[in-house]
Picture 1: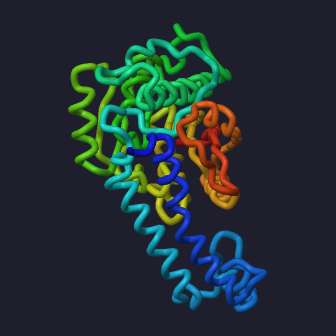
Picture 2: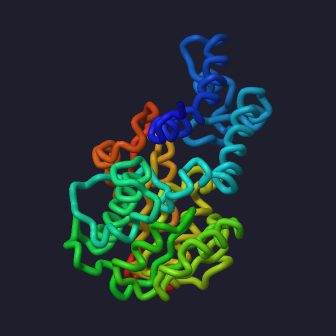
Length: 320
């Protein structure tokens, strides 16, 4: 029999990290007390380049372990951009790990599409995915939660970066009252899929457009949006979050807010916070492990990774 969907999702999320660990074990076989980076640290001079915060000499990028790791990361970036949504059931259009905050969401019937049985994995994916999006809208309004009849995004121009199948975008643009809601993907195939799925039911304020996550400033004018949302962008951010965050900072208006949530390691969280600071964005983070666990969609959490919500704001007095 086929494995339950939560188990399949956990395998994908957790298993994609096995290969880098194998490379690490290969390094430890020669140097039992050290990981790849620490094993190589002694070979790098104080003026060497940096990989994260660990000095790595330029020649080290040619070592087999690091070549394999680079290829592996490149594969997952390609997979997330081109095939990432295929790990979700076809009936699901909110493709996230989801969260359960114990709060009733408005109009749940909007996400319970035909063909989804009550209590099924798909049913839970849709409801918990919508709950995660509603939480983001609540945070954008400055509250831990808001009443289900409220319109927390009233009057805001919203950009969602990496919408996959667009279900979260359709839900928020319908219930949260934004002035405009633009959801982007860098794959035209995905954009057309979103348009087909939501053409009949999506509100007039919702648009699906093709744009690269790493070059937002090339697609949108500066200071175009009050709120930017990015739900589990994963490897689509690219090699470094700096270009990704810089593009977001460019399209945010003064006082505008970025809300990004994803499963991040300590190193990845630090790199993201560094990129936010470099872009001049004030920022805070919130650990969402408990509500994501309560959703029950992903039952395995990789070691040293936590589910984080990053809130960042462009200073109101920053010139446009």
